[in-house]
Length: 353
Image (spheres, rainbow, N blue to C red):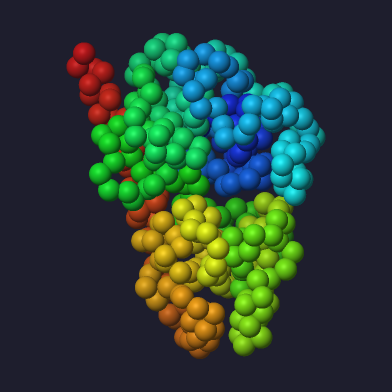
């Protein structure tokens, strides 16, 4: 991997992820993000450059720019705050005061030739640019991973990174790759660098989708029973991304029992933070992250397991390590190895032509 250079790219109208100029500093990338955790493992472990390019209607950039209504494109690009009027609760502590357009670059001004692999979101690199650099492996995520977009590849691109990481029988042009690509210690490392206090784990973090409230101001009523019977505080989600990840890292347990089915990107963050996940495995798509010992179906299950782990610290630590091992095997090593394999296959084909 020492000689592989990676760029990760989004357009100035994409409504998520980082708000910084070109950088490979994974802490700055994380702190500036709008909503979800970017694939900061690419920056931490592989020094990938994160780049924002200016919006263009050149093909195929005009196919699927983002999931916001057209009326919000200008707001996303040129506002310094309240970029998303439909989500006024979003915290802009680390990304406000600057327009995304001001730190975005014309796609023709980027020195693409220095990269081996370029990953973008929603085909924001024009076909005409791809044709100039045929030796590069050109990949893209689809922001919302809709089947209509991931089951056929856009012309000139080489690979789709499918967020359904462990889905069987993916097309030949596709590999499973998590949107929030992190290493088994990435988040813990980050928190240790941005926090000036020792991490002393205590409490139960309530996963955000246990409740529909935004922002989350109160525990789910049934979590109060966990608080009483386990003598542990319930810790709530914060809209401030740095404060939120500190809370997760300082929590001893992370619990999801209610609400919608999630893919599992947030669970990758939690495991990388070294916090034990207790979850109903029917509510997560990334099920192979979760050992059977961490599956829960009721509040009483959660209480019983917490009591057990509090009296069996070695078992608690074993399961922390096992969750990290699962992350490393299926959501870190395999995706990046599959990506590198795709690159070398293309190089072999390119050289033989």
